[in-house]
Image (cartoon, rainbow, N blue to C red; front, side):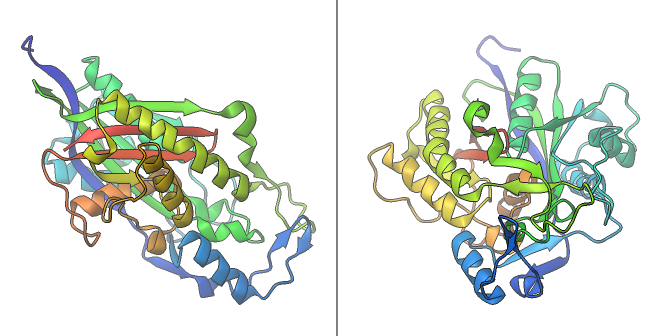
Length: 360
């Protein structure tokens, strides 16, 4: 490598899997929601309407009964490999970011043996033993952290191509008696990062991660059903929505600014923000707070592409899916241009917050 050149991690290909099953708000009209062990007596249609107003989620997607998380991840990975136009045997690493492994329809039991990355490698029929496959469990920010890990591998010279997958089937781990269950969705996104020599910065130019486990790890946990009559020992995804909202709005902007500062940039240099699709209202508040850190009162239009209204929150899959859709002109009003800077940012169970700055 030339003395004037450095190794950077650039996007070589993307792919996603969006389930066909559209779950509208009306799908929950027969639900019975509980809070603090008691049935919520409010009109169910009003609950659904208020939920959509707060989160901006009108629809979410659930996988077909026969599919597992590793299956939909493989589909997204196949698309990314085809998009990159590479030989799959040239992949040096497969990093699969998830939180719940493979869950059979109706089982509520997580299967992580072998690792889902190993399952994907098997399903892709990659024979090269030097293609190392492993999982990252990092809450919703998992795909962003997997990307940061891929960047380390590439910059160290250990890898030339890394496949980073974010996929989840949250429909199989939610509590049907918890109104928060309406947030969650299924999906998969995959991105191939490739080593590139360049004299000027390109690809991933900076990143920042923080973990706030001490006081906030209990905001997203596994717990029993809200219905006290269910005593089957199963646990479900549970979150303290109000406290999580407050935590994210205060802390995410700080971490994003650290990543931007580390790149030597200003928020006005950023043309697109790929933020975890967690809650529409929360994401809007995060962006307003971020601009306040720069003494700016207005968030520019067409800065933040959003898919949460029709895809819901698929955890680690939201950002790579969003990226794939934007790059393929499937999010109206958004077009990435060469030379533009973008920020990728996420927050979730841990509590972890991370961000990286990318130059296209």
